[in-house]
Amino acid sequence: MASRRKSRIIAMQILYQMQLNEEPIRSVTNKFWMSQDISFDLRPFAIELVEGTTENLETIDAELQTTSKNWKLHRMPIVDLSILRMATYEILFVNDIDAATSINEAVEIAKSYSTPKSPKFINGILDNIRKRHENIPAD
Image 1 (cartoon, rainbow, N blue to C red):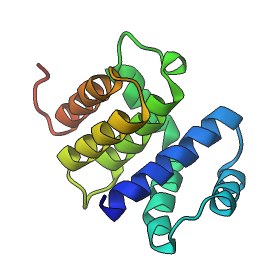
Image 2 (image 1 turned 135 degrees about the vertical axis):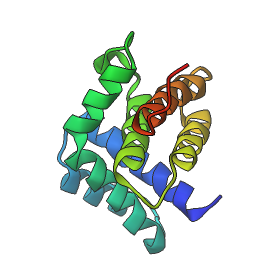
Image 3 (image 1 turned 45 degrees about the horizontal axis):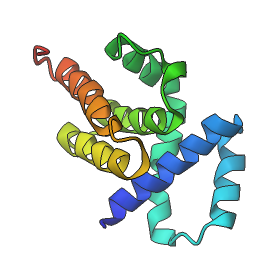
């Protein structure tokens, strides 16, 4: 497994714990590093994703809410929401990663960590975000 995917999985787990426990980023990341045997080379990208996602959470959540018309964010499984938030951050704010890569990585993570229906759900939402920001008409 590529190191960036491993970092994304770590970031998703930290975002999940932050949402589940309603704890601040520092507290969750410190506990996470202490409880997991994580290679130091995976941490910088994971931290970038977690900090970027949390710093832009209002914009990200507004984008997700606009895109997921029939789903309120509080009704989504926390794993799916964590994956969606992280991937939306990448699509909107990380210029050196193309949107297709971010979407693919989110779908692959969902296949391993969420429900059987989640990959399709996540793909649909993220692809619509990509289309809207690349000015491509939605299906």
